[in-house]
Length: 384
Ligand SMILES: Cc1ncc(COP(=O)(O)O)c(C=O)c1O
Image 1 (cartoon, rainbow, N blue to C red):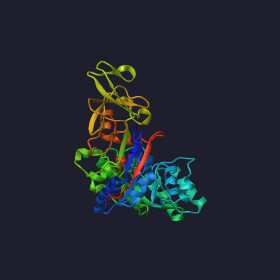
Image 2 (cartoon, rainbow, N blue to C red; image 1 turned 135 degrees about the horizontal axis):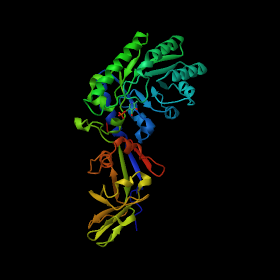
Image 3 (cartoon, rainbow, N blue to C red; image 1 turned 90 degrees about the vertical axis):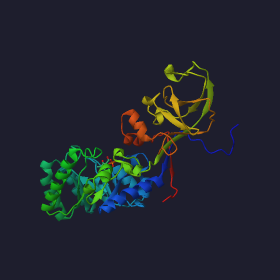
C-alpha cells in the first residue's frame, strides 16, 4: 500500500526554475552592460516553452529592460498579465490587431511600406503615437526590408515621424550564422547594418540599433550596439558551447515518476514490435510519458533516463503514453522520480543531448515540450 505522506508523483511535468532564469539574465545583461547596451529578453513561443509571463517577470527583476515576441497575440497576452515593460513585436500581417498593439503600447517592427501604412493607420485611429523599429534585411533573407527598398522606407518613416504618427525608436536586423563564430556572413551583415543605420541618420532619424541574439551577445561584443536580444541563453541553453562555458543554467527539467514495476525473464521482449529482447532476467519500470508528452518516438532504443540515481536505458519503442526503463537487478519503486532531461547536475540527460541524438537543436526540444497533458510547475525560490 502506498503511504499517505509520500510526495506527489508527477506524470509528465516541466519544472521551470526561475532562479536559473534570473541567474542567466543577470549574466547576459551583465555582458550587455559592459558594452553600454540594454537587454531585450525574447519570450516568444510562450517563453521558449517555459511560460512567457513568469519568465518575463523574472527577467525584468534581474536586469532585462525590454521584452521581445513574434506575434501580436503574444504581446497582448503579456499586457493582459499586467506586464507594462517595453515590448517589441516583430511579425504580424494584414488583418492582425495592429490598433490593439498600438493602444497597448507595444512597439512594432516595420519591414515594408505596407506594414508602415498599417501602423500609421492604427496610430491615427487610436490617437496614439506608435513606436516602431525599422528592420533591415542584412542577409538572413527572411523578415526585414531588402536593401533596395530601405531608403524609401526610411524616408516614409521619417515623414510619418514628422507628422507625429510614429516614433522611429530603432533600426534592427537579425543574424543568420551567429552560432558559427567566425562565419563570414556575420561581418557582411554587420557592415550592411551599419550602412542602413547611416541611411536612417541621413534621413533625419535618430534610431538606436540592435542586432545581437544570444550567440552574438556572447561572442561578438562589438555587435552589442544599443541593445541585445538574447533568447535561448536566457533559458540556460548555450548556443555556442564550443566557445567555452558561459555559466548558464538550464531552467527546464522534464520529469515523471514510476507508475509500475515488474520483472521479466531473459528472452522476453518489450513494447510494440518487440524490438528489444531482454538478454538476462531484468526488472523494468514503467514511466507514464510518451510521444504525446513530447518524448520523440524516434528516440526509441536511443536514450536513457535518470532513475534511482543512475542513468538507465529506455528499452523498446516509445509509445503514445508510456516508456519502459531497464533496471537489471536494481530495486526501483512505484512513485520514484524519473528525470528525462534537465540541467544535468545530477547526471540526468540534457535537452542538448536529446537534440544531438535527434539531429536538431535544443531550441526545438524545449519549445515543443509544453502540451495539453503536460503540467508545468514554476519554482521561484530566490537563490540570487
Ligand atoms: C528576431 C529575433 N531576435 C532574437 C532572437 C533570439 O535568438 P536566440 O534564441 O538565438 O538568442 C530571435 C529568436 O529566434 C529572433 O527571432
